Image 1 (cartoon, helix red, strand yellow):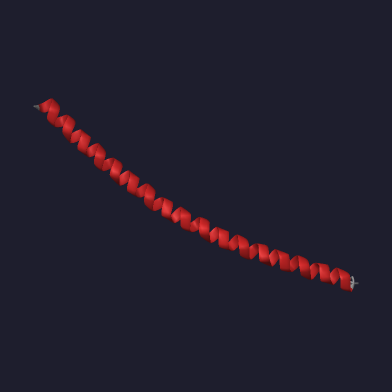
Image 2 (image 1 turned 180 degrees about the vertical axis):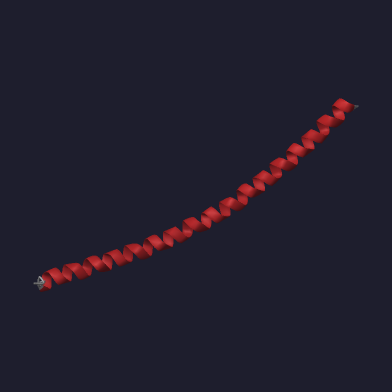
Length: 69
């Protein structure tokens, strides 16, 4: 048959559930912050690649002009 919980055991279980709920809420906030940082990082990385390709194209054009003149 089902095990009956004492009032103390029931109180401990309720406290544990409350602690887990608080921890889940805290981790959810942290996860949202990390996702936001990752999204910002993707934008920065894309910007770096665009700038690097522009600089590479500029140097390529300069080198081409120097050697074809």
